[in-house]
Image (tube, rainbow, N blue to C red; front, side, top):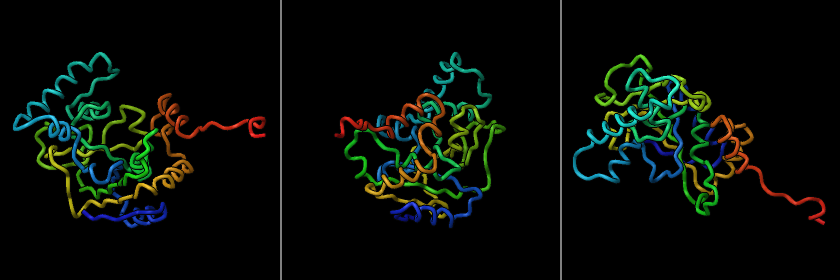
Length: 238
C-alpha cells in the first residue's frame, strides 16, 4: 500500500487528479493508525470473541436482523446482498466496507469534527483510494455473499436518499476478519491532525456537510450545531 502525507487541500487535489477516475472509489477514516480496512463484523468478532465460531456468529446476526427488520420496511430486499447493504446502512456489523465515488465525501468522513473532543485535532486521519478491478456486483447478484472467493465492489440500489447523496458504494469481503490490503491498487493519503480545520473549511466552502450528506432534519441539526456559534449583540459589545 502506498502512503502519502497530505498537508494542504491543493496537494490532495493533485494526488487525486493523478489517479484515473474510472473505477476509483474513496474511503475516509478518522484515525489513520487504528482504522485499517477491516470490516465492522471483523472488528466486532475480533474484539469480543475467542477461537472459532465466526461463520455461525455472522450468520446468526444477519438472520436475526432479517427476521426483525420486516415491520420497519417499505420494500423488502430480494437478495441477501441487498439485505447486507441495508443492514450495513443501519449500523449492523457486516462484511461490507463503505466507500464513495466522491473523494470529498470521503474527506468529510475523515475530517468530521468530534464535538467537544479536545484531542480531535491531534489525531491524524486518512483517505483511502482504491483502484478497483473491472468486476462490479449489483442488485442482479443472487449468489450467497457469505461464500464469495474474492473481494468485489458492490454498487447498491438507491434504497435511501443517503446512498444517493453520499454516492455510496461498498466492497464485499471474502476474508472479513482481516484488514484488506491490495498493495498495487490502494493509496493511503494521511492528513495530520492539526491540518484538519483547513480541510473542513474547504468542504464547507464547497457545500459538503451534514445537511447535504444526511438529507433531513438530523443532518440539518448536526450542521447547525457545528457551524453556528454564539455572537454578541451590538449592545453587548459596547
